[in-house]
Image (cartoon, rainbow, N blue to C red; front, side, top):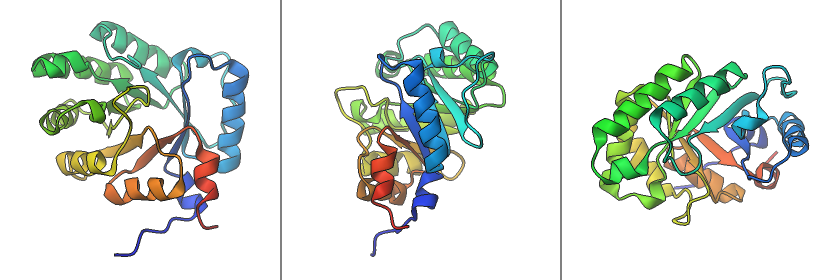
Length: 224
């Protein structure tokens, strides 16, 4: 089967142009926003401290995403919910929350669901993506995490934070996640996607959004 072909414009419209390095400055985030406008990406994804209702970023049509419970997921559920609520109040259109992997690994699925339900309530109508850190999970755990994301009303499941030593997105993980959530949720592939061919493989596997820090380089490989 021939590989999918996406134009630069088509690919840009599924990219969250991302800067989540802990040493990032406000000036770098503003530069990211300008680059996102230039490239025509769907959104930018930045740390919550870079959001401010009284000092909004210049985004034009580009949407604003941020993270909660990032990157470990080992925050109290109430803290994650408060962080998500504050992000929405500060202008975030989308929140990518890291689930508590310790609870998942321990088999406390009710605890995971209660946490994600609290964050879902806190985000209101904003888009909620659940980061499951697929590379650190077994297949059974990926299925459990995806099932909870569905039942708690998430809009997306997301492969990775990009910060875990186990690695980032793989087409195999994306395909498994897509099989778990069906057509009802989006699947975001994030972590280690550095070229056009890899981006296309993720989309072929079922991804509907990509988290990229090197968006310009990836888009450079796409046909005009």
